[in-house]
Picture (cartoon, rainbow, N blue to C red):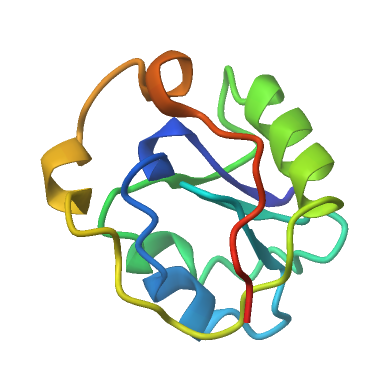
Amino acid sequence: MTYVVTEDCIKCKYTDCVEVCPVDCFYEGENMLVINPSECIDCGVCEPECPAEAILPDTEDGLEKWLELNTKYSAQWPNITSQKSPPDDADEHKGETNKFEKYFSPEPGEGD
């Protein structure tokens, strides 16, 4: 099992999870974070820290797409290990549906 970041992170990109990760397995895209599944130690400390509830164990049904996306982009985006301020409009997008189709960007973020 590993944890994955899902659609709920898009346009919210809270980084509370990054601060508690003991193995620094988060990577930053332009408008979301991902977890490198081969680096994740399945400790689960990140899951309750996410205000958008975007982090889930990959054992839940229907997360294959997200496991694939996390794997792909964690190899391309820069590592992020410290908390940053969320986007100004993060709370407006919290709980929004169909965010992948509307907003996903394959562009990298800044990282640390």
